[in-house]
Length: 333
Image 1 (cartoon, one colour):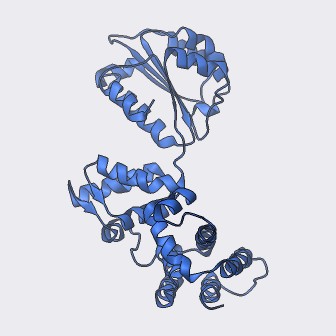
Image 2 (image 1 turned 30 degrees about the vertical axis):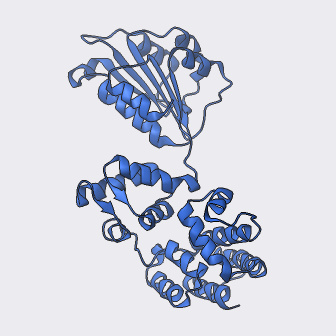
Image 3 (image 1 turned 45 degrees about the horizontal axis):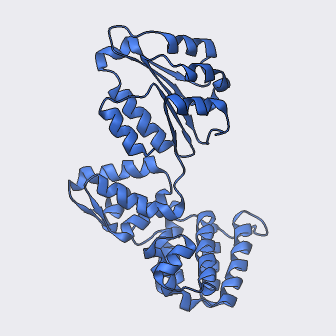
């Protein structure tokens, strides 16, 4: 069941007696559990009818006692077990899940990994309640997710701004939504987010960042490459070598695959590499600058400089010096 549909039912005062929320992506687990906390009880009912427990700090008997208690001056009770991955006696709740107290909403928040679907307790929860598995958003899905989320809050966003957020915030959905909310407040409703807005209000430079460095190397724009490298020298946190090298490796691995992909249309490359069509177009434009032999040599260089960045075979050169040397060899060797 989709998270938005679950939340829609919750907001319509349609509650299941059991919710088992699990998976690698905590964002949706938090979203659903917060919706339940907000809507299950009125504020004046929460003191006597809402119990929030944590896996490390509770025991089975205390939890069972809460689950079997009846509401006081309210229609229902809410019992929420947070950090349930740290609760060692989850399996013992199978009997309760088979016959839950009708006036209790029991929510299990099992984060950072998926619960074993073969276990009987999950089947019991599914029989009498709702199971929601929150899967991690993959890198190639992130730009589309960001664009869709931005539209859902009444804003628009251009392709470059989308890629900047995806590249620098990664698949941290909570952080992404927080940053978009800041932009919504600053820019107002119906605004269109640009890379300039990302630069001004989030602090990710639209011109001097790892995303722009990788693009400049891909397109062999030497002047731009060395301007960005110089910026990183004076602003080390903006571009750390141990982060830049994997970004380069990703680029050249993708370029190598493009050379041997039969369908070299933008759509074909997007499908083959599992990337956004915008990224596929950029990669196709860069392919002409690097033949397979050159790409293989660059990948060997990246391995060498990765070791140096980690202190192996390098006792004197700074990260900035290593980066200058690396990009020079990529562009001219």
